[in-house]
Image 1 (tube, rainbow, N blue to C red):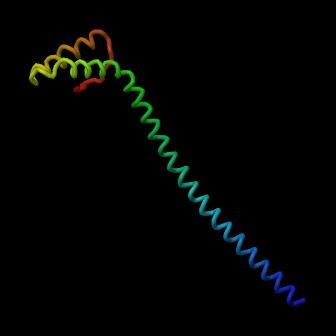
Image 2: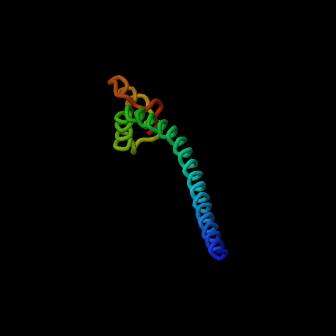
Image 3: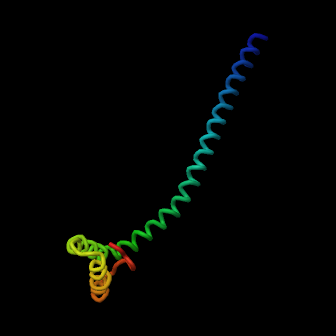
Length: 108
């Protein structure tokens, strides 16, 4: 009977050790999950801000592209002063007059 009790005790200790190991593993996993969720929460804020920037940029994309395309296509042969006269004073003003949105103070 003593041998049977020792065997049950040994099995009970083994089972206890397995349960404690599982509990430790689950605690570690739960901590990692908390850190991940916390990190994703802060990323949500950053992603929201980035979405707003992209929405704002999409409104001015057409004007910015027109200005850049005109700059690349037409003003390469001119000196700095004439290039600035064309895109700052003529093209930018023309885009504004026509109501084409563009980034304020853009520099192609």
